[in-house]
Length: 330
Image 1 (cartoon, rainbow, N blue to C red):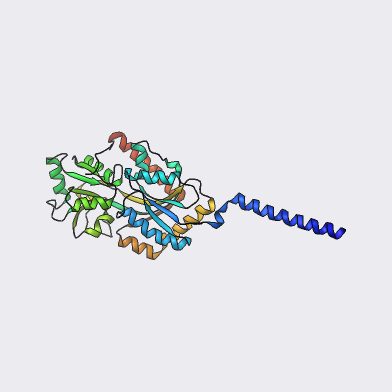
Image 2 (tube, rainbow, N blue to C red; image 1 turned 45 degrees about the horizontal axis):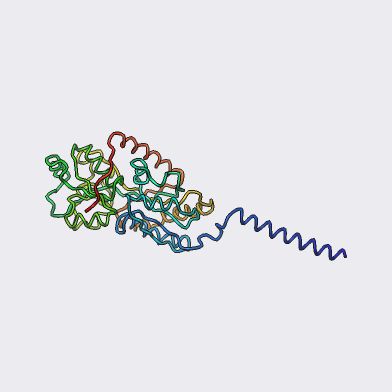
């Protein structure tokens, strides 16, 4: 009888241990099995632009780091707002990530009522930056930025300027250029650098506001008048900076990765570790250089703080020079 009682107690203790283990697993969530399916890396612009190119390169490296397929999804529209809203509304399980841009990430809520807010995201890491630039076709009459400024002053509002959307760095580059040079251009927004570049090459707009990395691969067909780095880029030393023409215009696209707010801590940690390893990978760095894109790695809370500072600066700009809406591209 005693042996039967002991066996029953042992079985009971065993069942209790199993139940405790199950409860512990439920408490910590299913992150141990992550990723359980392909990861969607969302881009807010059409294929062919700098953000899309960076995302597709990143996706290959993330796939290797995480041991799961990473698929780039282009959700173009509203200067990137559609993609940001999609990421914000997605389940915070690590299977949807956003390849985002600053300034659009912080300027869109300044200029309009958006369907996302800054607190809707987990900020994983910024990876690169790409200076804004002004480009024309090779046979353009504008040989220099000075030529453009002189003609813009003579014909205010007549020179068409294409950007990748209202509130993007390309558009804000025009806004700052107008303030600094005393000119006025005719803004025409597109839904990405690919369509914009085609419009410049096809003569549908005179001037294209694209990032340096988006224009340089087409330098045999485009003339880059100036780029908005703090000085000349070591990746394109032949392109002058705006400051060389006396314009204190420093602006660019900062590209990083966010996830929906509320990620499990171990998933967030693994993603940040993967991004940190990728940023340090010599192969990834060579690929970014080949895309004329500069490394600018900053992760987590430090990145969020920099974005908050930028948001305050752009809010100040909005108060004195609201950039507003513009007519759609033809």
